[in-house]
Image 1 (cartoon, rainbow, N blue to C red):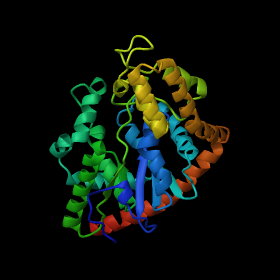
Image 2 (cartoon, helix red, strand yellow; image 1 turned 180 degrees about the vertical axis):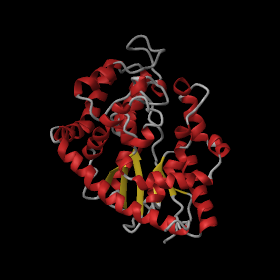
Image 3 (cartoon, rainbow, N blue to C red; image 1 turned 45 degrees about the vertical axis):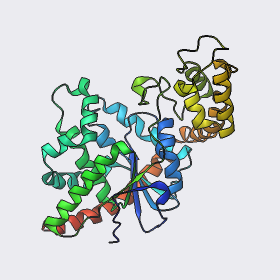
Image 4 (tube, rainbow, N blue to C red; image 1 turned 90 degrees about the horizontal axis):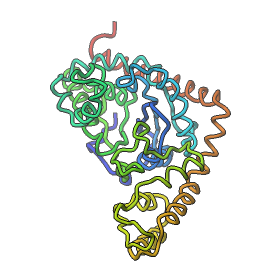
Length: 348
């Protein structure tokens, strides 16, 4: 087993090696938006040519905070795969799989749960943040499944001997917890599992159209890859602008304007420079600025939307991709589980 000693690495520093695996994925709780696009999907499209890549549809983990709405989870399984395919992720280069159809992951989760304490899970910064955000759902009593999310994720990663796991800064504590579990397992049962390395994206979390630090469906502030041109227009025209700018010729403050924030994502460097200068000089109106942004967003997302339409019209093709990938993924996860059970003396 080739070992990589880094705990984390920047995406631009990752050296291509098809003998190494990447594990990434999404919870099927809604369509993917531009936060996913800039934060992970564009990177996945590049990394698929550099590594053996596995992309998980984490439906089991989605149920940890959607246990009362399983239909929502089921309906979004194929939807997020359509989004993945539409941005150029190639099913001939990556393995898509459904988490709930890999029982080996569930079994590994049980074994790993013996190696981490409740107190350690409660101290995990990512878990603490998520529990606070789910106060309305859980009240004062978080569920065992939600608290144990990092253990389940460790099972996901190790089931496929993943070397690299692309994450944002806010997810680093989950990868560190996985590394702890791996070290504990290996110290007790012998060298069996690989410690994963976190691959950090260059893109910070994308803000919502309303300026909220988080973009999401429940907040109504997201631009989705599946949005049509009319939906993009409506959303951009209602985006938060400089609250101090009342009239068109007032001098603006682009640094507090969400329209300018999105221009930096979708517009050229020269366009952004001109927009900034004109806004500060009071020579650019908000409506014109928004219309320019709409055109630039549509120029980038339009081809993605068109490709997605193909898969919307061929849902059976999407399921075939998922079933083939899941079959392949399960064979690999079974090999890992067999190795783990042998180390644990459970190979009867």
